[in-house]
Amino acid sequence: MGRRGRPKIPRFISEEPKFRIFKPHGVPFGHLDKVVLTVDELEAIRLVDYMDFTQEEAAKLMGISRRVLWSLLKEGRKKISDALINGKIIIIEGGFYKIRECGFCMRNRFGIKKHCRNINNMNGE
View (cartoon, rainbow, N blue to C red):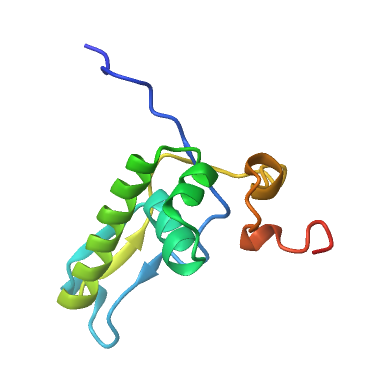
């Protein structure tokens, strides 16, 4: 039987993560539990918590609804806090995403005055 409901649409991200594994210092890799943070959860956290976009702006940038963005933020923050509090490894992988093309600029497409970090100075700004 096929999947019900609307088809899943890829979430737009600005770039692949530079680092994929974070772990507590001094403990061998094999002795720690792991938490898997998806790339789209990381992008939601990056846009809202790091770059100070509103949830509405971040949802538009990722091409998703505010409700989906909220779910990504909630799950991602829970995983990160679990890893930090309980000393787990964070592995960043997976998710359903697509790299945002430079032409998918926030200002041009949505009228938002901010730009993604990787598109800064694209128009000499």
